[in-house]
Image (cartoon, rainbow, N blue to C red; front, side, top):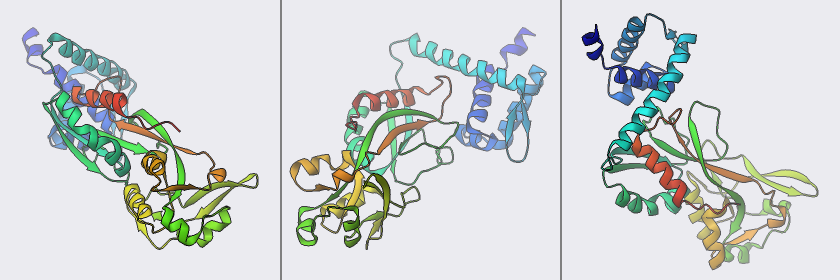
Length: 305
């Protein structure tokens, strides 16, 4: 009996089961482990058979934990976290390694991620970074992404998030554009200006402003749209029109006089929070992911409001 137990890779079974629950299904877990969905399903079935109890109720749309499965999952997360901690402490030679796929919005990528990449890889030479920049909100499970940096409100999900900071929003224009078209002094004046907008899904339909004791939204109907915030920043610098951008994007341009803030007296003071989003429960994270999250928290200075 003892020999039969030794032949079972219990930690491997436990890790697969935990990932099935965290990723929401056999197919997503199979992609994470490079297995087939049927192999993952059979592994969970063998685990249930060995334990003598059902852990999940299966349906065509989702998996639902049984009470026994919920208790097993919670204990399993703690066990895997303890196991990784034990391995990390077993020897000083232990270091993060492997491929780390990172997705970030384009402004954050250009301002922080790309400049910090050499420093991170110098500190962790056994890690390979796979970086994708886009302002579209991706499904990190479908895209097999380890960490995604997102700006704005987070949707409710089973993902974990680590706040990196927050930034206020501001309307800016190039001095040449304002000299030619005039500087708006009221929100209504904006209707006479070229208002540059974004064409990605999460873009706001208009610019929120405060005027006369109330809140208003000015629609964005300029003659150009762009797929990311950095492109809008470049168009504003080129003098095409006004853009509403994150303060961390434009603070150096404002200090240098390349862009000028507009209607700051009507700025509602809203902020965008920036988070690093990742899959992981109860501290169970690959060492490379933990190292990257710690590095971002240590080095990124978004500048508050």
